[in-house]
Amino acid sequence: MQQSKNNNYKSIIKSSAIFGGTQLFTILVNLIRGKVIAIFLGPAGMGVSALLTNTTNMIQQFSSCGVNLTAVKDISQAEAEQDKKMSGILLNIRVLIFVLGFVGLLICLLFAGQFSQFTFGNDNYIFEFRLLSIFIFLTTMANGELSILQGRKKFKKVALGSVIGAVFGLLIGLPFYYYKGIYGIVPAMLALSLGTLAVNIYLNKDNFNFSFNKLNIIDFNNSSKRMISLGIVLMIAVLLGTFSTYLLNIFITRTGGIGDVGFFQSANSMTNQYVGLVFTAMSIDYLPRLAAISDDKLKTNELVNNQIEIVLLLVAPIVTGFMIFSSLAVKILLTSKFLMIVPLLNAMALGAFFKAASYPLGYISFAKGDKKVFFWMEGVFGNFLQLSLNIIFYYYFGLKGLGYSFIIIYLIYLFIVSVVVYRRYQFKFESSSIKLTLILGLGCVSAFFIVSTVGNVFLKYALGTIGLIILSFFSFSELDKRISFMSILRSKFIKK
Image (cartoon, rainbow, N blue to C red; front, side, top):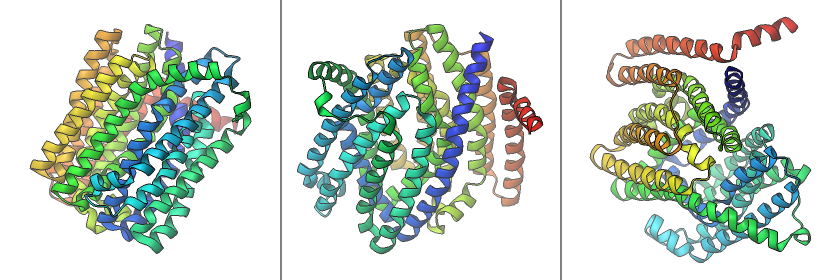
């Protein structure tokens, strides 16, 4: 049992190191890109970009029927069982993704007027939505190739693809934003989707097979029905999340203006980038491993608890540091026009800690293929809670209210999902997981209290920095207990 735990810890840390290092580079590139967008587009331009991106994401997720999600599960299970029919499975997935991507293209093309009217309240963006139909097709295909890489556990290639995609997005986007301003948003999106697809295909070149002549129609129909039957449930759940974000952006636009959408998306983007160091590894590495052992209750309990511990130990110092230096980060990474989002950033950072604690639990129903629980828990309850509280808190408290709602949402979600997975799958928290959650949570709450109440800038930074050092030392010590981190470093140093 202890050996199994050690292997889990090391696997989680290894994937976090691979994707964490990749994310650091990606974050640097995105920070430069965000700075450029903030300068050339401003809050209003960022609002337009957010609305276009959110709408096309919603269409793409609807048309893909969740197949890119179910593909990861199917491929990872086939890999674990060393299925000899892997080439046929991959061909079926690619053909299905192609068909679904074309459906998405047609939807966006045919209903461009309706999307423009509902999103912006006018017909000014019909042409942009028609162009973005190509973006939807290319993105669907690119996501399909990414799913294949994830399912086959080609994590280094996934990491490499994200690095290349980030650099390509920066280089191709800069000229469009500089010369075209808001009108350069759509061309930059199209160029990025094309580049991402090309990179993902190249990374999958060792098994890329897209020959219709080799397609077994009966096998294709059977596998498509199975993937879509599960995928539609997952798609609806994911789509409800995208749709709730879409409705929230529309509400903010109509209530406070498109500039507030830009402010909110800026805060959301900054928070996600830093905490994404950990979430990226979780989504790419954790799901395939959990799916492969999902039928074994004891192994599932062990892996989920191990994942919670490592995630919180990594997230807590990041969240704390982000809160302490949020004002400085806004000045450097955006412009002085965005300083008003600092209270929102601090609250969202604290909420991200509770989000990190709950996320490993939310994956259990998906890994087990439990459509009913996943749909009602992740799709209906989670998104209804998020949309309703965000609207209420924004209406009464403005932008900073969105941060407060973020904290409350994930506290409630953490409690509810814990009860659900206990009753449905007999999942139990280990004492070490509970202890870490309480200690690290107290540290993050203390940091939030300091940045929210201490008025003296010097005292705020002094207290915050001391707290950050203590929390970081504790996290490092706990990580070392689990993976003998210092011993690994010493052994490598001695060898050299």
